[in-house]
Length: 141
Image (cartoon, rainbow, N blue to C red; front, top):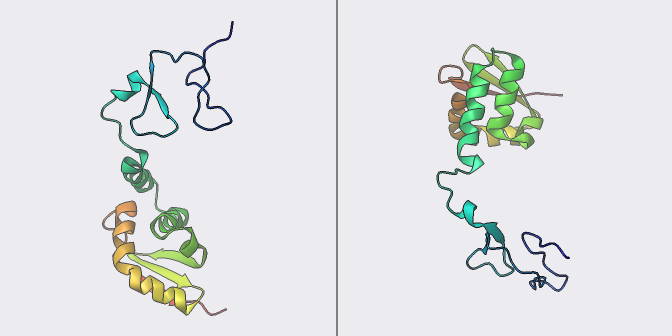
């Protein structure tokens, strides 16, 4: 006897299903063309929040609890500005001033334009009193 599979597999021809009877616990999402299947029990779950809604707050709390170090500052900088900008910059926390050295004057201009966005992100990650201002310097190689 052939066992029933949940959810029924799609055939190679697209949206057609195998002829096995569908189990009573499975439903098709409304409006789904090829039939995305889910369990009826999962349809009634309430209070489920997407990961993106609470992950930044959890990450900020973890970073804030770490002891002050160059690595903590560098990690917070990478989270605040993204990996592309973090690759072309070097950061050092001097009191409440974050000194940022950039490899090119174009990156320095980008940073100056984005200070209003970056500072609140850093304050959220490191604490309100950790960074008061950014000092952007171009490093000459």
